[in-house]
Length: 122
Ligand code: AMP
Image 1 (spheres, rainbow, N blue to C red):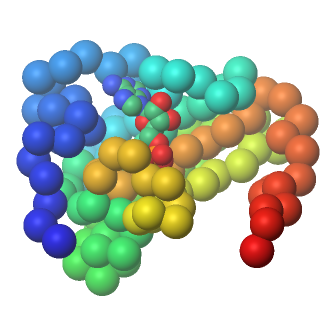
Image 2 (cartoon, rainbow, N blue to C red; image 1 turned 90 degrees about the horizontal axis):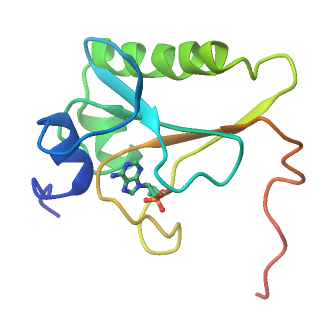
């Protein structure tokens, strides 16, 4: 599927709409989620046009991947959630309930997050 240049995170990257930025690197941007699910809820996105982990993991350069992953760790440290713990999550596609078609890693923290995934009916 072709990358949608009109998705909301593409607009944030082009500075067409604002974000609550917490960190930026050559290949990544991090900003607070507009609808936080936990006291700390930050999204880290690559600057490149990648829809999800699927095309990022196949198409991104080693430099992009390294910078992006390092940015995730750096944001967690900046948010002060390393000692008590945090969770990272990236949704892909329909079953993952991905809403915005630009790769983003959620960083959740600031409270006890409970078990990873609640059991669902098969
Ligand atoms: P996902 O289901 O993984 O695609 O989650 C998309 C996330 O993007 C949700 O947690 C939304 O609250 C968040 N979101 C949507 N629009 C914005 C925005 N303009 N700024 C910050 N976060 C946003």
